[in-house]
Length: 161
Image 1 (cartoon, helix red, strand yellow):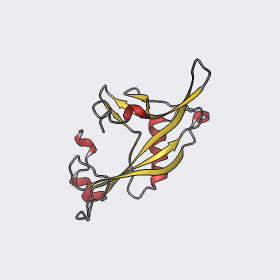
Image 2 (cartoon, rainbow, N blue to C red):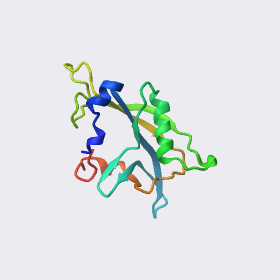
Image 3 (cartoon, rainbow, N blue to C red):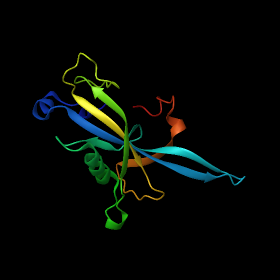
Image 4 (spheres, rainbow, N blue to C red):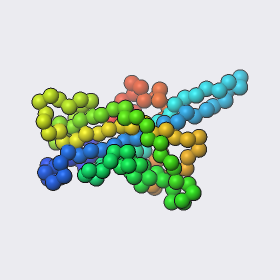
């Protein structure tokens, strides 16, 4: 795992616990079959960095920043088009997961261990509902992938956390 993703002791002493937010961009992609039946498969949008690493869009919040507003800021900075008429109206939904980093290591837990009084990072995942048509501007060093939800299940070797 990239060392940049782990909070440093120096930053922790200066800013306190790091809070990050990630978006699970979710929409249903409709596909017509030969029998003219409509099948809906939920897809999650991931950003691919290089050829191997994929991540949910989002990032670190500024100290004291509201989670919802911070997530909208991160999504707009990473995915929004420059044209004012194409700006997405981010519909931030429910928080579906909270992960904790108890120390300055790569491991995160879906709970804060009871003996930890000062965790180093809290990562929250929010559902973001996309409308029928959205326009994204993806930076050149990233790829935007629409991955069917069933592809993620039990497939860690391809979609590493």
